[in-house]
Amino acid sequence: GMRMIWRIIFLALMVPLFGKDIYFTRSGTVSFFSSTPIEDIKAINEQTTCVLDIETGDVSFRIPIRGFIFKNGLMQEHFNENYLESDTYPNASFTGSIEGWKDITLSEKLQPVPLKGTMNIHGISKDISESGNILMKGNRVIGSATFKITVADYEIEIPKILRDNIAKVVDVTVDISLKKK
Image 1: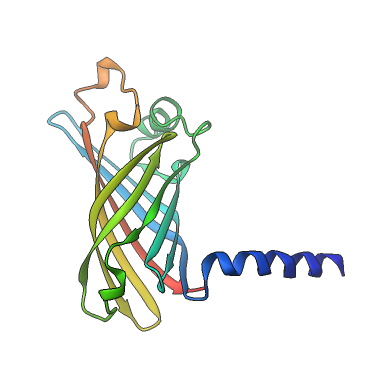
Image 2: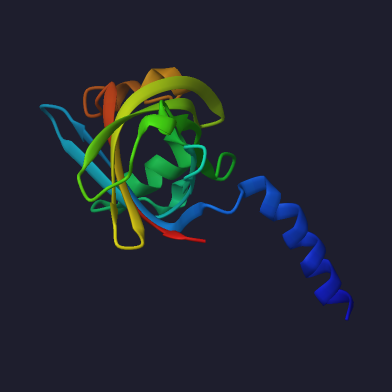
């Protein structure tokens, strides 16, 4: 009935957006590590959505901020409520592409790829370039990348009392395993 018609319209609108060679996951892993002489803070998030168009090399990530799990519950609370204000800014995202994609042949051999795009964290967007790695194993595209995130760039306020506990530059690691959509 009507629902079926809407579904067909929706699909007709969505498919051209993504092309047919879309690889996808809803359970990518993003972790970050902040190391200072006072304390190390680590958090892991296994709810990252990633889409890769293997025709064009366009790639996007969406990272739900509340998906980050910390060992320390209080730190998790501060992270969400005070630093990243996850009620106001529920997701971080990266939208961009793998540079020189046309010259890359996916294989079982891990190869470095340059990533270029826009990172949005805490409502602030920055253009970034980083290096990632990619390979193809069976029917999966497996990728990883490490981003160095400068906390101040994204207007994340750390209270004075905790400034020495939190690194000014945080290492963010992304690991994804994508299946054809």
